[in-house]
Length: 126
Figure 1 (tube, rainbow, N blue to C red):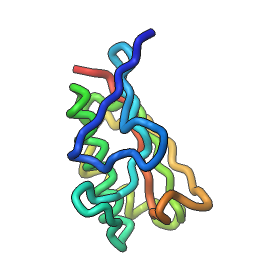
Figure 2 (spheres, helix red, strand yellow):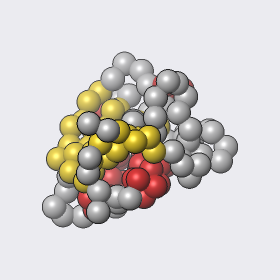
Figure 3 (cartoon, helix red, strand yellow):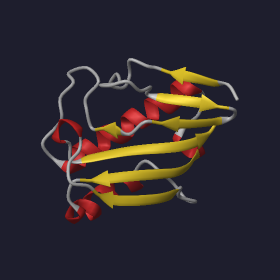
C-alpha cells in the first residue's frame, strides 16, 4: 500500500514527527487538529473558538488532500473537559450536515499546548 503525505500552510504545521494527514488509497486520515490559528500559532481562550478553528484546520487539510467535510465518515473529538461537550457540539453541527459522520468524544487529561479540544477525521476522497 502506498501512502502520500498531505501538507498545507492553511493549517498549523505538525509540532512533532507526524503528518497533517496521510492519503492511503481513496482515504484521508487527518492527525488531530488543535484550535491553533495557522497564522499566529496561538490558541483562543474559548472552547467554542478552539473547536471552530480546529474544524477549520481539518477542512483545510481535507481540501488539500482532495476531499471535503461532506466526505468525512468518522471523527474523534478529544475534550479536556466533558462539560464542554454541548458547546463543542454546537460548533460541530455548523460544519457538518446530515447524515452526520460517525463520532467518538473522549475526555482526556491533557492536550498538547494545553488545548481545550482536538479533532481528527477520516474521509473518502472525491
